[in-house]
Length: 413
Image (cartoon, rainbow, N blue to C red; front, side):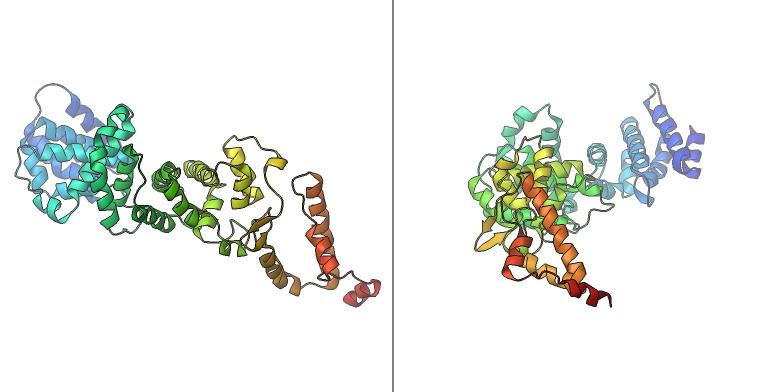
């Protein structure tokens, strides 16, 4: 057994994982174990679980399981564990987003609290230990499925959870504990009443802070943000809440100064998210909530997100659609006409086009106008849109002039 401890001290990577597997197997065997060796293992295993930087989750979980078995087999090792200061690291792990970290840390906290001199009073009074335990207990019971039918018994916990969420400062990152734990707890409680408007606004503030503008190499966003989006989807059917969500999550007239999905505001980011394949869970949740906030009406969905993204959302939700159902006629929002394809205001489209046209020759401008004219006529031919070709309208209004034969020669001279 002692030779395994030496390997644990010396090896790294997969070799150390193999040694941890050996040690774990040893502690599972029936019979009497050498308490001296078990005591010596605490410091070695504790370094692997808590102290070493950049340790992989798999290695940490193996080390935590080994410690759990040691504390179970030998009560004196529990005080050694406490004396080494490891309970503080356990409390930090209990606030992790990794469910294995949380469950293993809570199990160890229970063991090292029995038959030891551990004093958790400072963590209760000056930390958030009680909130962490309560949140983990609720979310674990709710997520297990086994006790889902019993979660209504925790409705009395709703007011204090809401109070904690309202008063806790938003951490950095915004979906770190305790905020992430409180959101998980809310998901576990089957409440039907409207949440206070201050809570809804705070959830939206957190979403705004947590959702990056660029998801490149950010697959972790799927696990981190999905619980919050699931909670927002759940409350989106409540009338007052729906109004507040629409005000923040659906594109406003001001958002439509650019094509939908191209800006950085929350509505633009959500629209992009509905088509983002790198975050499948969050993509689906976002599609559901945008559809729900659109009264589950394909026409309203097109109005809210534009034709391109609206078709994508419809397909992701396996919802059949036909061009006549999609409401792709010219949309009027407030006092502004909106392009149904892009969701952008028509007057803003004209402003956007000026810088691109400034560097073109007259011939290039005419070729671009012809290309757009043909593309739009093809689109009209499909029956998807039933509005006047904007190129033809621009020519009639004098914004586009037909190129004269000698203009081409002048441009080439």
